[in-house]
Image (cartoon, rainbow, N blue to C red; front, side, top):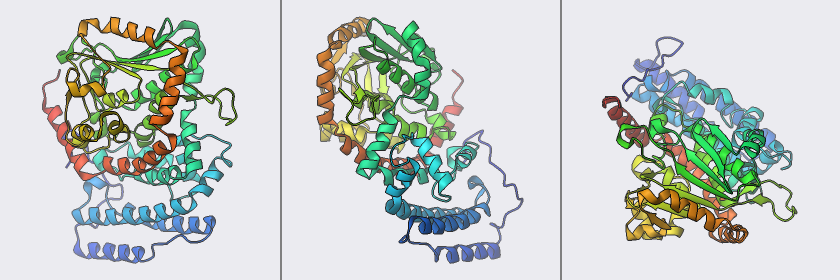
Length: 475
């Protein structure tokens, strides 16, 4: 199904064979012959890599003989799925067997820190057939989500294999905790002026507090690739600036007719961007959890040396102020901060299960914070929690009348501006969220979320919502 207004891509080589029974039969025979040669790794890295590359190249040829995904017949779709499934089995076995050697080679025996995109594309270049190249992923951007091949799933396979390894997984997590180059470039100006305006976020230092105000009013502060990048930059700056002692997260004032003049915390993932194929797996879905949200919990890695004195990370307390609602990713943020203020008329929800995706690390954190029963009601049942409900008290520290939120934020900043808070929250987070437990969660999340964003049920739901929104009168 193609959403209204979404153009179907045309195949460059002209009419295809899919509509002719004899051609279908020939393609099916070619597929079966290829599947019979599915390699099982059992040799050296070089030998297994050669077999993988040859097998994946033939799989690519089988896919290239078909029209683009949205123009395929049911038979072609089924054959394409078998090609992908076979290649993914081979890639998974290869990555599982050789992940330690691969990671050592790519990171020069863990002396280099590579962020997720750098690691994935370096592996793609060094080992053809294992991962999609940067060019292949860029080519996918020409398609809506329903029209993509799903090459990002192969990135998930590789990341799962690396994150399953304790030493290598911790090293990759450390790479994602380091300051971003963009933040390091902006740091002198922020230290000097106490203000940085990014496309989707305003960062201001007031006294000893860094106020991060999300400002994506067109989409009610829904998260997209740009907002995620801006959030990590701002979190880095707040943690790097020695004048900042407390961080505050809050939504900006909206221009949307329904919420004109009101602050909104977050509407969660931008489903329109997901429909259009603009939500990045590496930069958004994985980078968000391992980047700025992990930095909120575990701090910014400024001293990679294990013996660094007095500690390797910079950590500060974080306050979230929720106006109107915190949906999806917005609610996920509340699980990573130290103190939550919520307006009395606001609500929280995690509709990811209804949308069909995994709500980030909420499956990891919410059960500990809210208890198993309430966590299942929220994640699996889609329960919406109003801030004033008694059950919300495990998620909300203070319920505030809407007109008193500014004063409540300032009072909380004053309360948390203490060196003792920093030391204690660090020790509490070590207990609440052991890094190896988080690493093990991320390993399985890497594949599960990749599969979810390309699953038929998610694509159908997103397309229905996009079509319904397209029929609405313009705001």
